[in-house]
Length: 142
Length: 459
Image 1 (cartoon, chains in turn green, blue):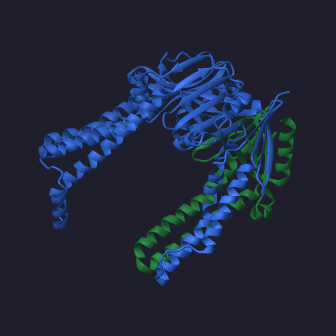
Image 2 (cartoon, helix red, strand yellow):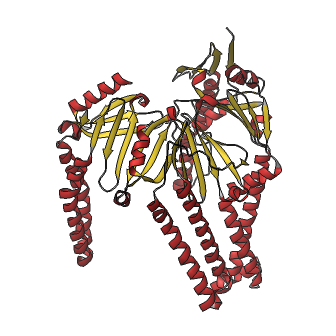
Image 3 (cartoon, one colour):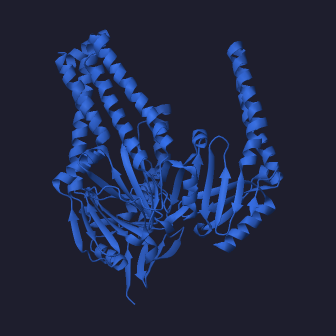
Protein backbone atom coordinates (compact mmCIF):
# COMPACT_ATOMS: atom_id res chain seq x y z
CA UNK A 1 0.00 0.00 0.00
CA UNK A 2 1.48 3.33 -1.06
CA UNK A 3 0.64 6.75 0.40
CA UNK A 4 1.96 9.46 -1.92
CA UNK A 5 1.96 13.11 -0.82
CA UNK A 6 -0.95 15.27 -1.83
CA UNK A 7 -0.58 17.67 -4.79
CA UNK A 8 -1.53 20.53 -2.50
CA UNK A 9 1.67 19.92 -0.56
CA UNK A 10 3.61 21.59 -3.36
CA UNK A 11 1.48 24.72 -2.83
CA UNK A 12 2.26 24.68 0.89
CA UNK A 13 5.98 24.35 0.19
CA UNK A 14 5.82 27.26 -2.25
CA UNK A 15 3.99 29.35 0.32
CA UNK A 16 6.72 28.57 2.86
CA UNK A 17 9.36 29.62 0.33
CA UNK A 18 7.52 32.90 -0.25
CA UNK A 19 7.25 33.48 3.46
CA UNK A 20 11.03 33.09 3.69
CA UNK A 21 11.64 35.25 0.61
CA UNK A 22 9.65 38.27 1.80
CA UNK A 23 11.85 39.23 4.79
CA UNK A 24 14.89 38.62 2.58
CA UNK A 25 13.47 41.04 0.03
CA UNK A 26 12.98 43.67 2.74
CA UNK A 27 16.53 43.15 3.96
CA UNK A 28 17.86 43.57 0.42
CA UNK A 29 15.82 46.71 -0.08
CA UNK A 30 17.28 48.11 3.11
CA UNK A 31 20.80 47.20 1.91
CA UNK A 32 20.13 48.88 -1.42
CA UNK A 33 19.76 52.23 0.35
CA UNK A 34 23.37 52.04 1.51
CA UNK A 35 25.16 50.16 -1.21
CA UNK A 36 23.62 49.53 -4.64
CA UNK A 37 25.99 47.07 -6.29
CA UNK A 38 26.27 44.38 -3.61
CA UNK A 39 22.53 44.60 -3.08
CA UNK A 40 21.91 44.09 -6.80
CA UNK A 41 24.30 41.16 -7.00
CA UNK A 42 22.74 39.54 -3.96
CA UNK A 43 19.25 40.16 -5.34
CA UNK A 44 20.08 38.45 -8.62
CA UNK A 45 21.65 35.49 -6.82
CA UNK A 46 18.72 35.08 -4.45
CA UNK A 47 16.23 35.43 -7.29
CA UNK A 48 17.98 32.67 -9.27
CA UNK A 49 18.03 30.45 -6.17
CA UNK A 50 14.39 31.19 -5.54
CA UNK A 51 13.46 30.21 -9.12
CA UNK A 52 15.45 26.99 -8.85
CA UNK A 53 13.71 26.08 -5.61
CA UNK A 54 10.29 27.01 -7.01
CA UNK A 55 10.60 25.16 -10.32
CA UNK A 56 13.04 22.31 -9.63
CA UNK A 57 13.56 21.56 -5.95
CA UNK A 58 9.92 21.56 -4.83
CA UNK A 59 8.61 19.26 -7.60
CA UNK A 60 11.57 16.88 -7.09
CA UNK A 61 10.92 16.90 -3.38
CA UNK A 62 7.28 15.88 -3.94
CA UNK A 63 8.24 13.20 -6.45
CA UNK A 64 10.83 11.73 -4.14
CA UNK A 65 8.56 11.63 -1.09
CA UNK A 66 6.81 8.31 -0.60
CA UNK A 67 5.30 6.26 2.21
CA UNK A 68 4.91 2.56 1.61
CA UNK A 69 3.16 0.14 3.91
CA UNK A 70 4.28 -3.46 3.51
CA UNK A 71 3.01 -6.41 5.53
CA UNK A 72 4.99 -5.76 8.70
CA UNK A 73 6.93 -2.59 8.04
CA UNK A 74 6.61 1.01 7.05
CA UNK A 75 9.07 2.50 4.57
CA UNK A 76 9.29 6.30 4.40
CA UNK A 77 11.45 7.87 1.67
CA UNK A 78 12.21 11.55 1.17
CA UNK A 79 14.96 13.97 0.28
CA UNK A 80 16.36 15.48 -2.92
CA UNK A 81 20.10 16.03 -2.56
CA UNK A 82 20.52 13.67 0.39
CA UNK A 83 18.03 10.85 0.10
CA UNK A 84 16.76 9.19 3.26
CA UNK A 85 14.72 6.07 3.76
CA UNK A 86 13.31 5.07 7.15
CA UNK A 87 12.41 1.43 7.64
CA UNK A 88 10.17 0.97 10.64
CA UNK A 89 8.85 -2.39 11.89
CA UNK A 90 5.18 -1.82 12.71
CA UNK A 91 5.44 -3.52 16.07
CA UNK A 92 7.86 -0.83 17.34
CA UNK A 93 5.40 2.04 17.09
CA UNK A 94 4.06 3.11 20.49
CA UNK A 95 1.34 5.45 19.22
CA UNK A 96 0.52 7.76 16.31
CA UNK A 97 -0.63 11.36 16.17
CA UNK A 98 -2.20 13.43 13.41
CA UNK A 99 -1.20 17.11 13.40
CA UNK A 100 -2.51 19.84 11.17
CA UNK A 101 -2.00 23.55 11.58
CA UNK A 102 -4.19 26.25 9.99
CA UNK A 103 -2.25 26.38 6.71
CA UNK A 104 -2.31 22.62 6.37
CA UNK A 105 -6.03 22.52 7.14
CA UNK A 106 -6.66 25.13 4.43
CA UNK A 107 -5.17 22.77 1.87
CA UNK A 108 -6.65 19.61 3.40
CA UNK A 109 -3.31 18.21 4.53
CA UNK A 110 -2.07 16.46 7.69
CA UNK A 111 1.19 15.34 9.25
CA UNK A 112 1.35 11.90 10.84
CA UNK A 113 3.81 11.54 13.73
CA UNK A 114 4.77 8.04 14.78
CA UNK A 115 6.12 7.93 18.33
CA UNK A 116 8.66 5.31 19.25
CA UNK A 117 10.39 4.75 22.61
CA UNK A 118 13.31 7.01 21.80
CA UNK A 119 12.43 8.69 18.51
CA UNK A 120 9.69 10.29 16.42
CA UNK A 121 9.10 9.82 12.72
CA UNK A 122 7.07 12.42 10.79
CA UNK A 123 5.23 11.84 7.54
CA UNK A 124 4.37 15.19 5.99
CA UNK A 125 2.13 16.27 3.17
CA UNK A 126 -0.52 13.56 3.34
CA UNK A 127 -4.15 14.06 2.46
CA UNK A 128 -6.41 14.09 5.56
CA UNK A 129 -8.27 10.94 4.59
CA UNK A 130 -5.08 9.11 3.68
CA UNK A 131 -3.50 10.14 6.98
CA UNK A 132 -6.45 8.78 8.92
CA UNK A 133 -6.36 5.56 6.91
CA UNK A 134 -2.64 5.15 7.61
CA UNK A 135 -3.05 5.77 11.34
CA UNK A 136 -5.97 3.37 11.67
CA UNK A 137 -3.98 0.71 9.85
CA UNK A 138 -0.92 1.29 12.06
CA UNK A 139 -3.01 1.16 15.23
CA UNK A 140 -4.59 -2.07 14.09
CA UNK A 141 -1.27 -3.67 13.28
CA UNK A 142 0.55 -2.72 16.56
CA UNK B 1 2.55 -9.92 50.02
CA UNK B 2 5.31 -7.70 51.42
CA UNK B 3 4.71 -4.01 51.25
CA UNK B 4 7.27 -1.30 52.02
CA UNK B 5 6.55 2.40 52.49
CA UNK B 6 9.02 5.27 52.43
CA UNK B 7 8.83 9.02 52.93
CA UNK B 8 11.04 11.87 51.80
CA UNK B 9 13.80 13.35 53.95
CA UNK B 10 13.31 16.98 55.09
CA UNK B 11 16.23 18.06 52.88
CA UNK B 12 13.93 17.55 49.89
CA UNK B 13 12.25 20.80 50.94
CA UNK B 14 15.45 22.68 50.03
CA UNK B 15 15.29 21.11 46.59
CA UNK B 16 11.83 22.63 46.20
CA UNK B 17 13.17 25.92 47.57
CA UNK B 18 15.64 25.92 44.71
CA UNK B 19 12.76 25.52 42.28
CA UNK B 20 10.98 28.45 43.90
CA UNK B 21 13.96 30.77 43.47
CA UNK B 22 12.16 32.79 40.77
CA UNK B 23 9.88 34.03 43.57
CA UNK B 24 12.84 35.83 45.07
CA UNK B 25 13.38 37.80 41.88
CA UNK B 26 10.74 40.35 42.87
CA UNK B 27 12.30 41.47 46.16
CA UNK B 28 15.80 41.48 44.67
CA UNK B 29 14.63 43.45 41.64
CA UNK B 30 12.86 45.88 43.95
CA UNK B 31 16.02 46.42 45.97
CA UNK B 32 18.12 47.00 42.86
CA UNK B 33 15.56 49.51 41.59
CA UNK B 34 15.54 51.39 44.88
CA UNK B 35 19.33 51.47 44.99
CA UNK B 36 19.89 52.55 41.39
CA UNK B 37 16.99 54.94 40.87
CA UNK B 38 16.48 56.35 44.32
CA UNK B 39 19.87 55.85 45.97
CA UNK B 40 18.45 53.85 48.88
CA UNK B 41 20.50 51.18 50.49
CA UNK B 42 19.55 47.54 50.23
CA UNK B 43 16.96 46.58 52.80
CA UNK B 44 14.47 43.87 53.38
CA UNK B 45 10.83 44.55 53.92
CA UNK B 46 7.97 42.54 55.35
CA UNK B 47 7.18 41.46 51.79
CA UNK B 48 10.66 39.95 51.33
CA UNK B 49 10.45 38.01 54.58
CA UNK B 50 6.95 36.79 53.73
CA UNK B 51 8.11 35.49 50.35
CA UNK B 52 11.00 33.61 51.97
CA UNK B 53 8.72 32.09 54.62
CA UNK B 54 6.09 31.05 52.06
CA UNK B 55 8.76 29.40 49.92
CA UNK B 56 10.19 27.53 52.89
CA UNK B 57 6.76 26.32 54.05
CA UNK B 58 5.85 25.32 50.53
CA UNK B 59 9.05 23.30 50.22
CA UNK B 60 8.47 21.58 53.57
CA UNK B 61 4.88 20.72 52.73
CA UNK B 62 5.87 19.40 49.29
CA UNK B 63 8.56 17.19 50.78
CA UNK B 64 6.15 15.80 53.39
CA UNK B 65 3.57 15.03 50.73
CA UNK B 66 5.87 12.59 48.88
CA UNK B 67 5.18 8.94 49.62
CA UNK B 68 6.72 5.92 47.94
CA UNK B 69 5.43 2.38 48.34
CA UNK B 70 6.71 -0.88 46.90
CA UNK B 71 4.14 -3.66 46.86
CA UNK B 72 3.18 -6.58 44.66
CA UNK B 73 5.92 -6.01 42.12
CA UNK B 74 4.93 -2.37 41.62
CA UNK B 75 6.22 1.01 42.69
CA UNK B 76 3.54 3.47 43.84
CA UNK B 77 4.37 7.17 44.11
CA UNK B 78 2.24 10.05 45.39
CA UNK B 79 3.41 13.65 45.58
CA UNK B 80 2.22 17.22 45.74
CA UNK B 81 -0.28 19.01 47.96
CA UNK B 82 -1.61 21.69 45.59
CA UNK B 83 -0.72 20.09 42.25
CA UNK B 84 -1.11 16.45 43.17
CA UNK B 85 0.09 13.54 41.13
CA UNK B 86 0.19 9.82 41.61
CA UNK B 87 1.53 7.08 39.43
CA UNK B 88 2.53 3.45 39.56
CA UNK B 89 4.90 1.39 37.49
CA UNK B 90 5.87 -2.29 37.30
CA UNK B 91 9.28 -2.97 38.79
CA UNK B 92 10.29 -4.71 35.56
CA UNK B 93 9.69 -1.44 33.68
CA UNK B 94 12.30 0.36 35.74
CA UNK B 95 15.49 0.92 33.77
CA UNK B 96 17.84 1.99 36.55
CA UNK B 97 18.10 3.42 40.05
CA UNK B 98 20.68 6.08 40.78
CA UNK B 99 21.73 6.84 44.37
CA UNK B 100 23.81 9.93 45.01
CA UNK B 101 25.45 11.19 48.19
CA UNK B 102 27.61 14.29 48.52
CA UNK B 103 29.16 15.98 51.56
CA UNK B 104 26.00 17.91 52.46
CA UNK B 105 23.66 14.92 52.30
CA UNK B 106 26.22 12.86 54.21
CA UNK B 107 26.10 15.36 57.07
CA UNK B 108 22.31 15.08 57.36
CA UNK B 109 22.33 11.28 56.79
CA UNK B 110 20.36 11.42 53.58
CA UNK B 111 20.83 10.21 50.02
CA UNK B 112 19.35 11.28 46.73
CA UNK B 113 17.47 8.57 44.86
CA UNK B 114 16.48 8.81 41.21
CA UNK B 115 14.41 6.14 39.53
CA UNK B 116 14.05 6.11 35.77
CA UNK B 117 11.59 4.01 33.81
CA UNK B 118 11.86 2.79 30.25
CA UNK B 119 9.45 5.52 29.16
CA UNK B 120 11.77 8.33 30.19
CA UNK B 121 13.40 8.99 26.83
CA UNK B 122 11.94 12.46 26.30
CA UNK B 123 12.28 13.78 29.84
CA UNK B 124 15.27 15.73 31.05
CA UNK B 125 14.82 14.71 34.71
CA UNK B 126 14.28 11.31 36.27
CA UNK B 127 10.72 10.08 36.79
CA UNK B 128 11.21 9.93 40.56
CA UNK B 129 13.70 12.22 42.27
CA UNK B 130 13.78 12.53 46.06
CA UNK B 131 15.99 12.44 49.14
CA UNK B 132 15.46 9.70 51.70
CA UNK B 133 17.21 8.94 54.96
CA UNK B 134 20.26 6.72 54.90
CA UNK B 135 18.55 4.21 57.19
CA UNK B 136 15.68 3.68 54.76
CA UNK B 137 17.88 3.56 51.67
CA UNK B 138 18.97 -0.12 51.81
CA UNK B 139 15.37 -1.19 52.41
CA UNK B 140 14.14 0.82 49.39
CA UNK B 141 16.86 -0.54 47.11
CA UNK B 142 16.38 -4.10 48.32
CA UNK B 143 12.60 -3.96 47.91
CA UNK B 144 12.92 -2.83 44.28
CA UNK B 145 16.00 -4.66 43.09
CA UNK B 146 16.17 -7.73 45.40
CA UNK B 147 19.86 -7.47 44.72
CA UNK B 148 22.39 -9.84 46.16
CA UNK B 149 25.77 -8.99 44.72
CA UNK B 150 27.92 -11.82 43.51
CA UNK B 151 31.16 -11.11 41.67
CA UNK B 152 32.79 -7.87 42.58
CA UNK B 153 35.22 -6.13 40.27
CA UNK B 154 37.35 -3.17 41.20
CA UNK B 155 39.47 -0.84 39.16
CA UNK B 156 43.21 -1.23 39.71
CA UNK B 157 45.58 1.76 39.88
CA UNK B 158 46.77 1.09 36.34
CA UNK B 159 43.22 0.90 34.98
CA UNK B 160 42.30 4.11 36.83
CA UNK B 161 45.26 5.90 35.28
CA UNK B 162 44.32 4.63 31.84
CA UNK B 163 40.69 5.65 32.19
CA UNK B 164 41.63 9.07 33.55
CA UNK B 165 44.08 9.62 30.68
CA UNK B 166 41.55 8.57 28.07
CA UNK B 167 38.83 10.74 29.58
CA UNK B 168 41.07 13.73 29.59
CA UNK B 169 42.77 12.99 26.28
CA UNK B 170 41.71 16.29 24.83
CA UNK B 171 42.82 17.95 28.02
CA UNK B 172 46.04 15.95 27.88
CA UNK B 173 46.75 17.50 24.50
CA UNK B 174 46.15 20.89 26.00
CA UNK B 175 48.41 19.94 28.89
CA UNK B 176 51.25 19.16 26.51
CA UNK B 177 50.67 22.41 24.66
CA UNK B 178 50.48 24.54 27.78
CA UNK B 179 53.61 22.91 29.24
CA UNK B 180 55.44 23.60 25.98
CA UNK B 181 54.39 27.22 26.07
CA UNK B 182 55.43 27.39 29.69
CA UNK B 183 58.93 26.15 28.94
CA UNK B 184 59.14 28.24 25.82
CA UNK B 185 58.36 31.34 27.82
CA UNK B 186 61.11 30.48 30.28
CA UNK B 187 63.46 29.66 27.42
CA UNK B 188 62.85 33.06 25.91
CA UNK B 189 63.88 34.53 29.24
CA UNK B 190 60.57 36.16 30.10
CA UNK B 191 59.85 35.35 33.71
CA UNK B 192 56.51 36.08 35.20
CA UNK B 193 56.63 39.28 37.24
CA UNK B 194 53.32 40.98 38.08
CA UNK B 195 54.86 44.48 38.60
CA UNK B 196 56.71 44.33 35.32
CA UNK B 197 53.53 43.18 33.62
CA UNK B 198 51.64 46.17 35.00
CA UNK B 199 54.28 48.59 33.69
CA UNK B 200 54.34 46.94 30.28
CA UNK B 201 50.53 46.97 30.13
CA UNK B 202 50.51 50.69 30.89
CA UNK B 203 53.06 51.31 28.15
CA UNK B 204 51.10 48.97 25.85
CA UNK B 205 54.31 47.18 24.95
CA UNK B 206 52.72 43.99 23.66
CA UNK B 207 55.84 42.44 22.17
CA UNK B 208 57.48 42.11 25.56
CA UNK B 209 54.20 41.55 27.38
CA UNK B 210 52.94 38.57 25.40
CA UNK B 211 55.44 35.83 26.34
CA UNK B 212 55.14 36.24 30.12
CA UNK B 213 51.38 36.48 29.79
CA UNK B 214 51.34 33.26 27.81
CA UNK B 215 53.49 31.65 30.48
CA UNK B 216 51.08 32.76 33.20
CA UNK B 217 48.03 31.47 31.34
CA UNK B 218 49.78 28.21 30.51
CA UNK B 219 50.71 27.70 34.17
CA UNK B 220 47.12 28.14 35.27
CA UNK B 221 45.83 25.76 32.58
CA UNK B 222 48.47 23.17 33.46
CA UNK B 223 47.56 23.31 37.14
CA UNK B 224 43.85 22.96 36.35
CA UNK B 225 44.36 19.98 34.09
CA UNK B 226 46.64 18.23 36.58
CA UNK B 227 44.03 18.70 39.27
CA UNK B 228 41.22 17.32 37.11
CA UNK B 229 43.44 14.39 36.16
CA UNK B 230 44.10 13.55 39.83
CA UNK B 231 40.39 13.80 40.66
CA UNK B 232 39.60 11.54 37.69
CA UNK B 233 42.13 8.91 38.83
CA UNK B 234 40.67 8.91 42.35
CA UNK B 235 37.14 8.65 40.98
CA UNK B 236 37.96 5.69 38.77
CA UNK B 237 39.96 3.98 41.52
CA UNK B 238 36.89 4.16 43.73
CA UNK B 239 34.78 2.34 41.10
CA UNK B 240 33.52 -1.12 41.99
CA UNK B 241 31.09 -3.36 40.15
CA UNK B 242 28.90 -6.12 41.50
CA UNK B 243 27.14 -8.43 39.13
CA UNK B 244 24.13 -10.66 39.51
CA UNK B 245 21.94 -12.47 37.00
CA UNK B 246 19.47 -9.65 36.61
CA UNK B 247 21.32 -6.61 37.83
CA UNK B 248 24.57 -4.68 37.68
CA UNK B 249 25.54 -2.51 40.64
CA UNK B 250 28.14 0.21 40.17
CA UNK B 251 29.59 2.24 43.00
CA UNK B 252 31.85 5.20 42.41
CA UNK B 253 33.15 8.36 44.03
CA UNK B 254 34.91 9.53 47.17
CA UNK B 255 33.51 12.93 48.17
CA UNK B 256 30.42 12.47 46.02
CA UNK B 257 29.44 8.81 46.18
CA UNK B 258 27.07 7.38 43.62
CA UNK B 259 25.50 3.96 43.27
CA UNK B 260 23.79 2.80 40.15
CA UNK B 261 21.58 -0.29 39.89
CA UNK B 262 20.97 -1.28 36.28
CA UNK B 263 18.39 -3.86 35.27
CA UNK B 264 20.07 -5.97 32.62
CA UNK B 265 16.80 -6.62 30.80
CA UNK B 266 16.50 -2.89 30.14
CA UNK B 267 19.90 -2.35 28.63
CA UNK B 268 19.25 -1.19 25.09
CA UNK B 269 22.78 -1.31 23.73
CA UNK B 270 26.37 -2.05 24.60
CA UNK B 271 29.06 0.16 23.11
CA UNK B 272 32.73 -0.71 23.21
CA UNK B 273 34.87 2.39 22.94
CA UNK B 274 38.56 2.54 22.08
CA UNK B 275 40.01 5.99 22.57
CA UNK B 276 43.62 6.72 21.51
CA UNK B 277 45.13 6.09 24.96
CA UNK B 278 43.17 2.88 25.49
CA UNK B 279 44.14 1.62 22.04
CA UNK B 280 47.78 2.24 22.91
CA UNK B 281 47.43 -0.16 25.83
CA UNK B 282 45.14 -2.58 23.95
CA UNK B 283 42.22 -1.86 26.20
CA UNK B 284 38.68 -0.71 25.61
CA UNK B 285 35.85 0.76 27.63
CA UNK B 286 32.35 -0.64 27.77
CA UNK B 287 29.35 1.68 27.94
CA UNK B 288 25.76 0.66 28.55
CA UNK B 289 22.82 2.48 27.02
CA UNK B 290 19.63 2.14 29.01
CA UNK B 291 16.15 1.94 27.55
CA UNK B 292 14.32 5.20 27.88
CA UNK B 293 16.98 7.04 29.86
CA UNK B 294 17.02 10.56 28.46
CA UNK B 295 18.85 12.07 31.43
CA UNK B 296 22.37 12.88 30.31
CA UNK B 297 23.91 11.89 33.64
CA UNK B 298 22.66 8.39 33.78
CA UNK B 299 22.41 7.43 30.16
CA UNK B 300 25.79 5.82 29.71
CA UNK B 301 27.80 3.99 32.31
CA UNK B 302 31.51 3.36 32.06
CA UNK B 303 32.93 0.08 33.18
CA UNK B 304 36.62 -0.42 33.93
CA UNK B 305 38.85 -0.78 30.91
CA UNK B 306 38.86 -4.40 29.81
CA UNK B 307 41.28 -6.20 27.57
CA UNK B 308 40.52 -5.99 23.89
CA UNK B 309 39.53 -9.28 22.29
CA UNK B 310 39.65 -8.03 18.75
CA UNK B 311 36.64 -7.85 16.48
CA UNK B 312 35.24 -11.28 15.77
CA UNK B 313 31.66 -10.31 15.20
CA UNK B 314 31.51 -10.27 11.40
CA UNK B 315 29.51 -13.33 10.43
CA UNK B 316 27.38 -14.44 7.49
CA UNK B 317 24.79 -11.70 8.04
CA UNK B 318 27.17 -8.81 7.86
CA UNK B 319 27.77 -5.97 5.45
CA UNK B 320 31.29 -4.73 4.84
CA UNK B 321 32.35 -1.28 3.75
CA UNK B 322 32.54 -0.36 0.08
CA UNK B 323 36.02 0.11 -1.37
CA UNK B 324 35.26 3.66 -2.46
CA UNK B 325 34.46 4.46 1.12
CA UNK B 326 38.14 4.21 1.96
CA UNK B 327 38.98 6.96 -0.53
CA UNK B 328 36.05 9.09 0.59
CA UNK B 329 36.70 8.61 4.27
CA UNK B 330 40.42 9.15 4.13
CA UNK B 331 40.84 12.01 1.70
CA UNK B 332 40.04 14.95 3.97
CA UNK B 333 42.12 13.83 6.98
CA UNK B 334 44.94 12.83 4.58
CA UNK B 335 44.85 16.23 2.91
CA UNK B 336 44.82 18.01 6.24
CA UNK B 337 47.78 15.97 7.50
CA UNK B 338 49.78 16.74 4.37
CA UNK B 339 49.01 20.46 4.58
CA UNK B 340 50.04 20.61 8.24
CA UNK B 341 53.23 18.68 7.57
CA UNK B 342 54.03 20.99 4.66
CA UNK B 343 53.45 24.03 6.87
CA UNK B 344 55.69 22.62 9.57
CA UNK B 345 58.41 21.70 7.08
CA UNK B 346 58.16 25.00 5.26
CA UNK B 347 58.26 27.10 8.39
CA UNK B 348 61.21 25.32 9.95
CA UNK B 349 63.28 25.27 6.75
CA UNK B 350 62.39 28.58 5.12
CA UNK B 351 61.74 30.77 8.16
CA UNK B 352 64.06 29.66 10.94
CA UNK B 353 62.90 32.51 13.16
CA UNK B 354 59.47 30.88 13.25
CA UNK B 355 60.79 27.72 14.84
CA UNK B 356 59.77 26.87 18.32
CA UNK B 357 56.16 27.38 19.22
CA UNK B 358 54.65 27.40 15.73
CA UNK B 359 56.68 24.36 14.72
CA UNK B 360 55.46 22.46 17.79
CA UNK B 361 51.89 23.47 17.02
CA UNK B 362 51.93 22.38 13.40
CA UNK B 363 53.75 19.13 14.12
CA UNK B 364 51.32 18.25 16.92
CA UNK B 365 48.34 19.05 14.71
CA UNK B 366 49.80 16.93 11.89
CA UNK B 367 50.32 13.97 14.24
CA UNK B 368 46.75 14.25 15.56
CA UNK B 369 45.34 14.52 12.07
CA UNK B 370 47.40 11.54 10.93
CA UNK B 371 46.16 9.45 13.82
CA UNK B 372 42.60 10.47 13.05
CA UNK B 373 43.04 9.33 9.46
CA UNK B 374 44.46 6.02 10.63
CA UNK B 375 41.52 5.37 12.97
CA UNK B 376 39.01 6.25 10.28
CA UNK B 377 40.69 4.00 7.71
CA UNK B 378 40.79 1.18 10.22
CA UNK B 379 37.09 1.60 10.98
CA UNK B 380 36.12 1.71 7.31
CA UNK B 381 38.26 -1.29 6.46
CA UNK B 382 37.07 -3.43 9.35
CA UNK B 383 33.74 -1.87 9.82
CA UNK B 384 30.24 -2.29 8.62
CA UNK B 385 27.06 -3.58 10.08
CA UNK B 386 26.52 -7.03 11.48
CA UNK B 387 23.70 -9.21 12.67
CA UNK B 388 24.15 -12.36 14.65
CA UNK B 389 21.97 -12.58 17.75
CA UNK B 390 22.37 -8.86 17.99
CA UNK B 391 22.55 -6.02 15.55
CA UNK B 392 25.61 -3.83 15.52
CA UNK B 393 27.87 -1.40 13.77
CA UNK B 394 31.54 -0.52 13.77
CA UNK B 395 32.56 3.07 13.07
CA UNK B 396 35.04 5.77 14.02
CA UNK B 397 34.27 9.27 15.23
CA UNK B 398 37.08 11.80 15.65
CA UNK B 399 39.86 9.66 17.13
CA UNK B 400 37.74 7.03 18.83
CA UNK B 401 36.70 3.60 17.60
CA UNK B 402 33.16 2.42 18.42
CA UNK B 403 31.68 -1.03 18.27
CA UNK B 404 27.99 -0.93 19.11
CA UNK B 405 25.66 -3.84 19.57
CA UNK B 406 22.02 -4.11 20.53
CA UNK B 407 19.41 -6.84 20.61
CA UNK B 408 17.39 -6.91 17.42
CA UNK B 409 14.18 -6.37 19.41
CA UNK B 410 15.57 -3.01 20.61
CA UNK B 411 15.93 -1.66 17.10
CA UNK B 412 13.10 0.78 16.44
CA UNK B 413 13.91 2.09 13.04
CA UNK B 414 16.56 1.72 10.34
CA UNK B 415 17.47 4.60 8.04
CA UNK B 416 19.38 4.37 4.80
CA UNK B 417 20.98 7.70 3.92
CA UNK B 418 22.54 8.50 0.55
CA UNK B 419 24.43 11.63 -0.41
CA UNK B 420 25.07 12.39 -4.11
CA UNK B 421 28.55 10.84 -3.82
CA UNK B 422 27.04 7.70 -2.28
CA UNK B 423 24.48 7.46 -5.07
CA UNK B 424 27.20 7.77 -7.68
CA UNK B 425 29.20 4.87 -6.26
CA UNK B 426 26.27 2.70 -5.12
CA UNK B 427 26.88 3.25 -1.42
CA UNK B 428 24.74 4.27 1.53
CA UNK B 429 24.91 4.92 5.27
CA UNK B 430 22.94 2.68 7.62
CA UNK B 431 21.62 4.27 10.82
CA UNK B 432 19.85 2.35 13.59
CA UNK B 433 17.50 4.03 16.05
CA UNK B 434 17.40 1.97 19.20
CA UNK B 435 15.41 2.14 22.42
CA UNK B 436 17.00 5.24 23.88
CA UNK B 437 17.46 8.88 23.07
CA UNK B 438 21.18 9.04 22.77
CA UNK B 439 22.34 11.35 19.99
CA UNK B 440 25.11 8.99 18.97
CA UNK B 441 23.00 6.50 17.13
CA UNK B 442 24.42 3.34 15.65
CA UNK B 443 25.69 4.05 12.20
CA UNK B 444 27.73 2.38 9.51
CA UNK B 445 28.93 4.46 6.58
CA UNK B 446 30.19 3.58 3.11
CA UNK B 447 28.24 0.32 2.80
CA UNK B 448 27.33 -1.30 -0.47
CA UNK B 449 23.75 -0.27 -1.30
CA UNK B 450 22.41 -3.66 -2.39
CA UNK B 451 23.94 -5.45 0.59
CA UNK B 452 22.54 -2.87 3.00
CA UNK B 453 19.07 -3.39 1.47
CA UNK B 454 19.45 -7.12 1.94
CA UNK B 455 20.57 -6.50 5.51
CA UNK B 456 17.44 -4.53 6.40
CA UNK B 457 15.19 -7.29 5.13
CA UNK B 458 16.63 -9.83 7.54
CA UNK B 459 15.64 -7.78 10.55
